[in-house]
Length: 164
Image 1 (cartoon, rainbow, N blue to C red):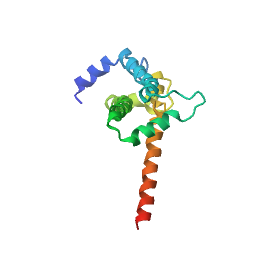
Image 2: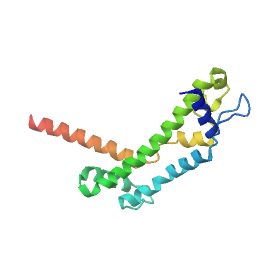
Image 3: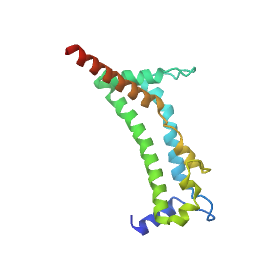
Image 4: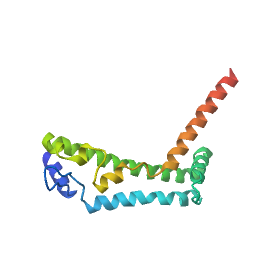
């Protein structure tokens, strides 16, 4: 990355540390807003699937996602693409955040990085870092993919031994 591009991006994202021992923090209102909006997308999943969240924490969403992924109905392809897009959005934001954080460490040098707790430790006082260190926003979608993968592996294994 060109140093001029880096410094312009650094300025646009308002990344600063007020002292040598203080962590660099993302203070860009735009970045914080888009992160919160991305996180709020998880509340749209039940509506996309046409199910209600189980107040007792049951697996309604996960079961609905597994049925959706397994059904192969042409009418459901839009929902599948939308759910995949939600996860891609989350992944893209996290990739940007952690890549940019690594870039700061590289470009600013080791002296800056050493005094920078936010960049060196997983426990950070920076609220935006805490948002990005949280587990996935879509655990039901991930779990459904895992269980469906296990199902296909089991089915393939059973079919393989049955045919032999």
